Length: 296
Image (cartoon, rainbow, N blue to C red):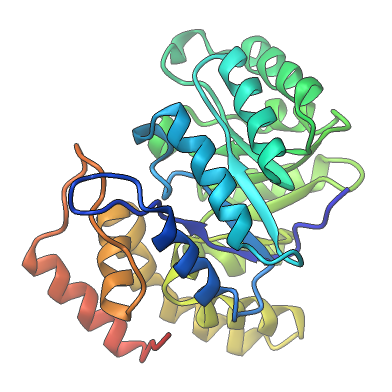
């Protein structure tokens, strides 16, 4: 069992002006962010544009990111694909590259057929075959499928399923899951917008897009809560919401990359069909960053 306690940035994947993969830029970002007390990094999550990479590129990202991530920090690898077969292959390749655990988004293309039986059999097969522990990934905004508490609780009983990243933001469901699961199953908040509510319900930490550009702020919310300074945690949580919303639900990956560029990290262009943000969004992002006095 590995501990998921703490904060993880879900790293954006770097591309150059010709749309080619730039793992050297990802390595630079990892080395810079590793100066913060982060528990680890997620590579090829939703912010990593997993669906926009070829399979060979995905394997290269796993390998090159692991080379840059310090040995005392975890590497979580996004491996969710539409077929059980390819998901298993990705888990095995990520493990071979040095991933400590895999994050598996549910299949969703045939969402009308993805009932509890289909999802349970999928995750069961992947967990059986994965050489490293599996974390369930619930991201209804992207998958169009919101896994229910009963399904997640059933999956949590598999010995190789160690946790859940829940990006849905339904605190009632999150609390229900945390209350019902047995043993050491670990829940992580999937957005800084509800990090403090999640921690209050028993989440162990978060995988947070905002941690790429404001790791100190995310860590402050976490530490204040852990140290019992709830009013300070509440204030920082409220401060985080506008910028977090802008780089997640509102303008997404392109906005996150623009914010990284503005702060001196490498964001670069998103891979098409995603488009860079326009000048008006840039100005808004720069203003929000300035108001929070964020410096990396």
